[in-house]
Image (tube, rainbow, N blue to C red):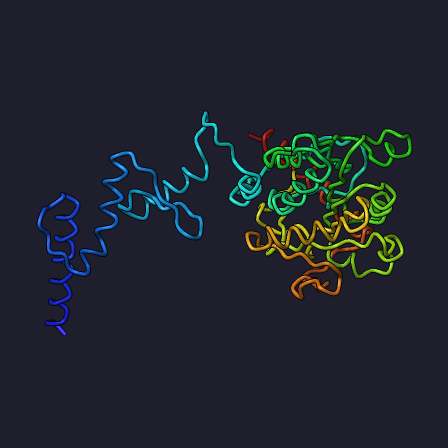
Length: 361
């Protein structure tokens, strides 16, 4: 065993010495089979020094002239795929599309809940994470293209206001024309103050009848809509009644459960704020016959491999991991109201005790 190890070490040493001689341009090196295998990178290096153009492989990827190491190859390929600013070579549509895959999640965590212009359930006040918008970015990109618009011109409407972080998330993805303001959306709908928009994107409150009301609004709007709803909604009888067969959506399921952040709460932001899975309900059928299926087919052909999400055309094709199985029990509205009052009382009691302790000191 020791002799075999010594022989391997000696062979590795000779290999390093031979490569060093080739880099230094040694003349008269023995043309063995291994040396011939390393002669091509040296020729490409000399050709690059002389100003020659790099060659392309048969698969179409750039073959760098400097093959000195993997780090150098990665740097040159990135420089080729993302040209520096000021050059005439603009990024292609494919490069713009795939850029969102590499965007890292950004967590916006406001410390306190802002004053709202409408009544809301404390448990429903949660911010949608950046990952959720990153998953639907390709579909919005293609939707804007079909409408003859760019990202910045696509008008997005989110009627349910939380803390406004969704505006920053979509702006980071290139969608800057977003309407999400602190107002009572139901009063705005009744008074005719609904803004003009191209697509409806929202994560409605999960309590009460908010989900039924947003589904009715989306179907009657005549616009494309993307709703972030719990998994059990698709299995309810009321869903079939509210959404006709001609407007049945598809479903974009993330690779892992979305984690929401609740402003003003003491729990860590990594704790799930929902006892069930949620995913996107997509419907583009208002664009015309075949538009919805064409957009879904485009996503599966161009983006499915790069994305960890799953696109289910029908409810029957939903992954088994998102079937409606609760992992915790949520109290009914009356019990939640009592718990909120008790927490408020304990909070005031704690403040009173703090004042007493301060007075004693």
